[in-house]
Length: 201
Image 1 (tube, rainbow, N blue to C red):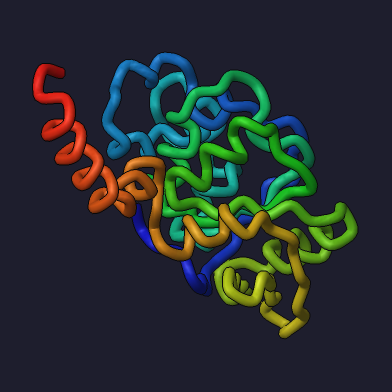
Image 2: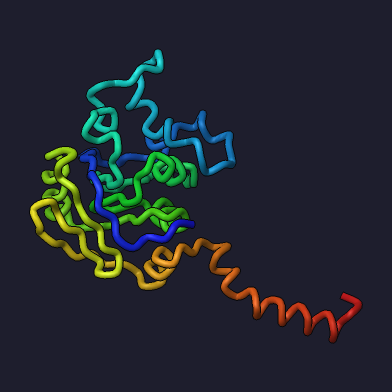
C-alpha cells in the first residue's frame, strides 16, 4: 500500500449529501477482485449518459478537475453497502483524500486499508474548503498528515482529528497484510518452536 505523508493537489467540489457506495461504483462493476481499472467507472451514472458519453457538467469531467487528488464532499459520504470497490475506484481515479463532515463507518475504515485519507471536519470548515475548491485548478490544497492540517490555496490552515493507529498505518503504508508482515520474525520463531515441541502437528 502506498504511504501517505503530504499531498498538494487540486480539490474537486462535490457538495452532495448521502453519496452512497452505489453512486461511487455501481453494482455492475463489482465482478472484479482487482483493485485497478475501476477509476474509469467512478461515479459512472453521474459521469456518463446512457450512450457512454461524458456529461460535461459533472465535476470530474470538467477540465480543471480531471486531475483532482482531493474530493470535498457533503455529509454522510460512503453510506450504503460495505463494498470495498468504492475506495478502490476512488484511489484508481487518483483521489488520495476525501474531506466531508461525516463518513459511513465501513467506508471510512476501508479508506485507510487502501491508502486513502478520509478527513472529517465540521460543516463550517468543509464549507470553507468547498468554496476554495470551486476556484478550480489554480486552487491547490495541501494535506499534511503528520501535522494533521489542511491548508487552503489562500494559506488558511485547518486542523483535523485522527486515530493515532490509523495515522501510523497510513503514513507507513500498512494495510492488514502489512501489519501482519511486521510480525514475521515472531511468527517464524513461534512456528519453529511449535514444530520442535509438537512435531506431530
